[in-house]
Image 1: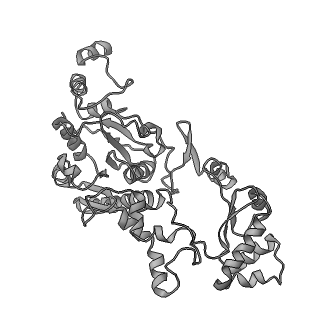
Image 2: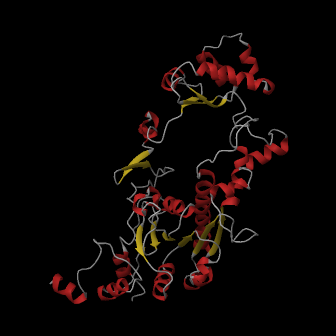
Image 3: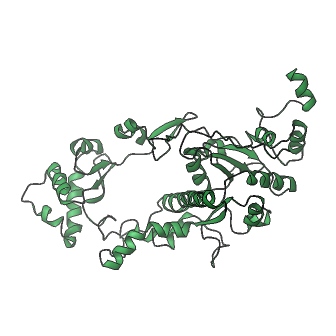
Length: 411
């Protein structure tokens, strides 16, 4: 095995992170989302998948969030698999993993082992509860993590239980985005000093961070610690969603007085109607909401979208299948096609280093042979590793013979 070989693409993909080498240990939840963000922006991300598959979950290649990587299958419970993973970590700038505390250490791939192999490595860890604390070793999911932060309590109508906001607040924003931000900050430090470090990204920390605005307003007396009683939580009649005549919904967000005036004008509310005064009086909000709901219920969603076009600060609530065809999103190219699947395009946008189109999510092991070869392993060794279950080769990646066969074919 040569020390100069690298499985990472030094030329990289288009984008501001071109040349950044990331090793992602495949996981679920926030880890894949962070890996997608880094790959979207040009990092070369190699994902280490485990042998076999879980039939209860979508195949990685069918999950858009796994786009942009190359995949190698390694059995990290085997000594040979661990050695190969450490070899990859030694050549990476960043490693990200999303297991419970202690799992990577038990595999022999914890921060101490990886930083010994690569002192400049940024070792990014994302979990629900964090690496320490009374709950660190316990199981959980997005909804439980955001429940204890106060974020879930603040979402939804007053008279109903808080609804699960998908996994947007916890896994994606509080976990995945926080991890991506954290490792990039640590990369800047590593490039300046040559010293790597561990980044502990916890969903409970990230989701709490997202509520900073409301803690400030609560302390200032500008926020009530209850649902449906505040300016932007559905309490105000000019900020919320309403059912239309066709059963679909309209979102209204006319916070400022001049936008509220345009909204009411286009809703057909007369100049002297008490509703205009009630909109500014929190004590009158419940009645004002009922009045607006009754007006909006008289037309379909798309009719209101046409009527309220402009600065009334109202928008149709579109479904996931409708959203890519919205004229504004279509004009900006907010959605793109990857492997025949419509999905959000990389963001944000960069004037000097634009991101390229995402590559489809790889099947597990699609690049096993190429990555092992780049590490210096010949075809006979790769075949042996596959035969021992240390790695797996896809049908298109599997060699048809040993190194002698290859030499004969090449001649």
